[in-house]
Image 1 (cartoon, rainbow, N blue to C red):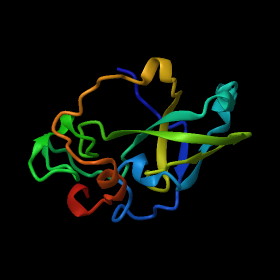
Image 2: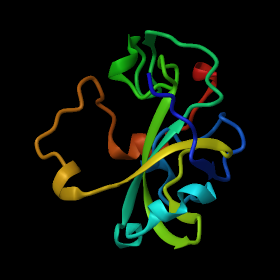
Image 3: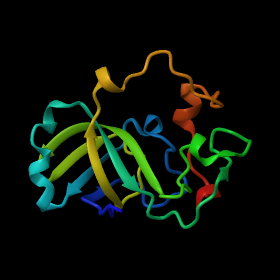
Image 4: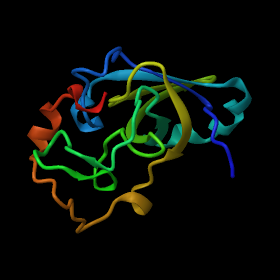
Length: 158
């Protein structure tokens, strides 16, 4: 079994889980930065040509696992794998953020819905030709874009 170790740290203005945006859509204007460990800095080469990146990270404040959770945008319990809840078996998260700059081992980003000090596990470029899916379905989620943008976290996933 391969052990996943952090490759850096994500920094944001979010110092508490309470009141954070629940998705990057609700954090569009929120800037943050990522510090990559120096040993991985060479891996950032050629990343500056991408407008957006995926950040994969550890929900390091998640203290439990639940197989049924009530998502922020719903009132009904759902299977954890049909949600973006942090209470997953491996406490892993993913966000697509806008890449606004690279200076050495520091990435400047916008759209940060991530808690300050979060361990970064990996980075991948967002490539619309690979990643954009036309005619996709969003299962149980019926919220509008405005509802999603306005929703903030609460105590349910502590």
